[in-house]
Image: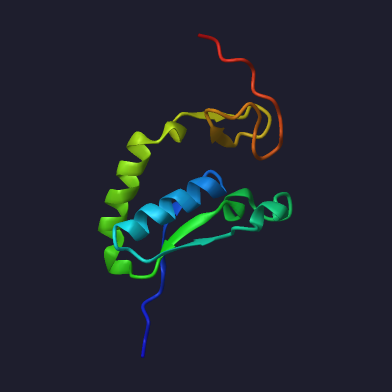
Length: 111
């Protein structure tokens, strides 16, 4: 029996973000899996984007439904605000005080 290939639908900012979205997709009836759960130990050894947790779905035909769940999640998630690191150029969630990638501290936000 031929299984269609899985499809990546989301690259997460961090592991809790990936797990939360996977759970939301599963609640919506979409079989989802998190990959790169242990990849943070490889940061510096692999390209950064490939080291971030990724959410994949088992049924590619469910992608439109999955994208709708993701859009809803992103619209109400507090992590939609991001900071860009001046040292390495990576984006981190707005609530972070330092870059997840290189550890550089963010300047205090000017209001």
